[in-house]
Amino acid sequence: MEKRKIVVIGSCNTDMVIRVDHLPLPGETIIGHDFMTNQGGKGANQAVAVARLGGQTAFVARVGKDGFGEQSISLLRAEGIDTSCVTTTEGVSTGVALIPVDDKGENSIIVASGANARLSIEDIKVAEPLIREAGIVLMQLETPLETLMYAAEIASKAGAKVVLNPAPFPKDPLPEEFLSHIDLITPNETEASRMTGIEASDEGSIHQAIRAIQRLGVRDVIITAGGKGAYTDINGELVHLPACKTKVADTTAAGDTFCGALCVALSEGRSLDDGIRFANQAAAISVTRMGAWRSIPRRKEILAQEN
Image 1: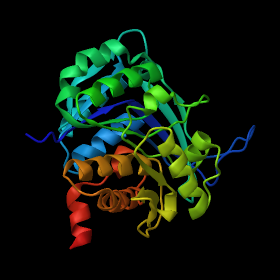
Image 2: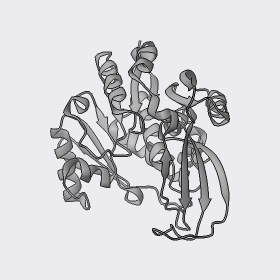
Image 3: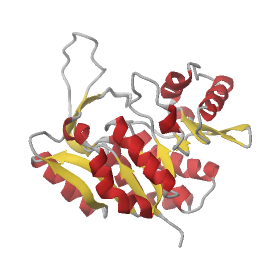
Image 4: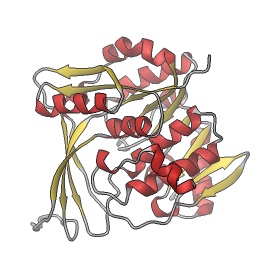
């Protein structure tokens, strides 16, 4: 039987978002406008995107034993996500992110990891039955690297497609041992540049960066480029999938929506380029709305655009 389940391993945060005229400079105090709290964390965002866009989803994460953690688990369940491997952690807070968003929709993000930093190899061992059932395992870099490396090895040996969104990118290079278990990676231009030392700024340099990442052991590479769309290599040729034109309000969860949507499309047997088109559609809807989970669309919204 074809494995269609998507297991997301990653972070779960509560986002505190302030609307500002411009992002503050070092030492600058500015007056903000609208304030909202929103569920977030790259892992949770991606799990919600998978669920809303039609994927069968399980989430592996840690939250604190506090109000934020209880609320996160409750809301994840309400989205239809399997939270049996979301662990409540004593003595540490749920992750928190502070996010100013300017009038162009750009943001900066400060994260206090909290319980996310406690996600352990033991947690992956508990979640191993879920991982072995998965067709795709999706992860990011807001939880300990050694935990993700163990999970990637387990998933790869079980025959799952391992997808890595390499954000936030670490100070040190990603280990080759880790990359050897990654089937698909989705860096943005900055992350691709840090991985390769190649400034990925135009089509020629982006293709060079893709090939350099492939030489590190990852078969499929998608470099996302915000409003320019996304780039990949198919049969040795650079393929550019333009972004959908839209008015930008907030880009906070655009990348996470893209990753979740991409995994749903691939789990349904779509080709890589068709999956990117679907992901671009979902991300384009998300940037028109404020917040993380609040911005993530449902599948019917994409279907309505296609009809």
